[in-house]
Length: 85
Image (cartoon, rainbow, N blue to C red):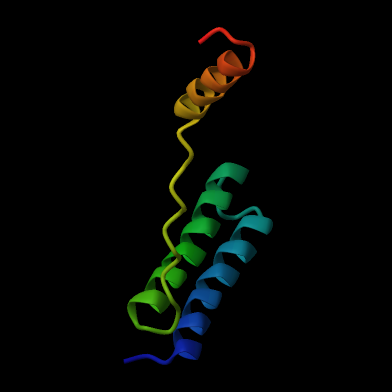
């Protein structure tokens, strides 16, 4: 099994090769294609580091608020304050 430094070095090498090719004009990639490949390299590295136990997986996002319910609750409170209900 590779060490964390070996995994990082392998992806850094991919990054450097992509960057050199793009900025030398030899890659034929558009800026968007370069950006997508660049992000994929680092995303793949993160996934591999997590899979091998070197990093923790990101925590799931907090549940989102139910804004429709909050609006309904506020309308009901305003109605009570104004004496409509």
